[in-house]
Image (tube, rainbow, N blue to C red; front, side):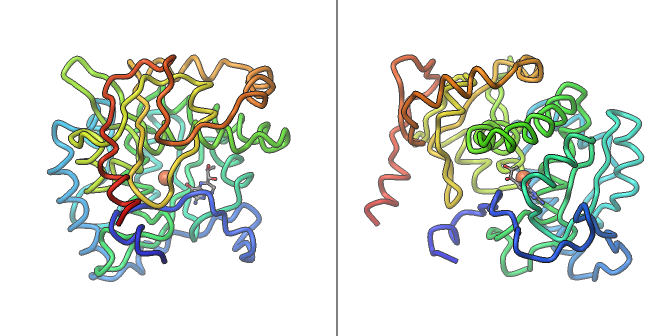
Length: 297
Ligand SMILES: C[C@H](O)[C@H](O)C1=Nc2c(nc(N)[nH]c2=O)NC1
Ligand SMILES: [Fe+3]
């Protein structure tokens, strides 16, 4: 593991474990809730209490409402069966256990069928802020509350269906960027200020502070084709956060036919995470101080 990622609690996505033998045809396993140790529940408690305190006034209303209405608390790692019972009522979703990263098309197949694949393991006590693969805290604390929101629930299902198509059309890289800059690292403008809805941020202590308070990163209005052309960082804080005006904007994405867009952006140059275009609607022009300091460290 390289030093850079040790400092920020980054969760690596997308390096699907294609080589490992699948535990089952769809890579799902039994969560094995009864086997969690007191130490594992204690890690959950530490992360849950620390993050819940920090997210007050930082997480978006949909995240707060979702967390409130779910059987999820500090005292134990949530039982996916209990989570799914409530989720199914609310948005028809369920949480299925997986041993870690699954191949892209397996991931999309689950999302397209309103099954959210969640790692059933939890990070070690000595790596509270460092993670190789998405664990149960990232997947359940970070992703599941937003699945209680009907608009977001529809969006992630549509993303799953779109992902299977993109996989066939070889345009996965562009669509993965939309997932990254929305579902993982998205911000939304609320009347009471900028708020977090991305799971990669909501489950990260350090990035929940950096993404809203630090002057370094750019904060730019979400624009689909712009995002589909923009690379992202998997080893450190994001250099840019894309901001929705409201979650309903995601509904638009559910209806779009991506094929003509793929054709158009293929002819355009790729963009780097720190780029700012004069066509961008810039909410905050970053100093880039954090990343340039890292580059010269
Ligand atoms: C699809 C997404 O861009 C990314 O490639 C993947 N994410 C995940 C994955 N597998 C798991 N378990 N969790 C993820 O978030 N496989 C692939
Ligand atoms: Fe994730």
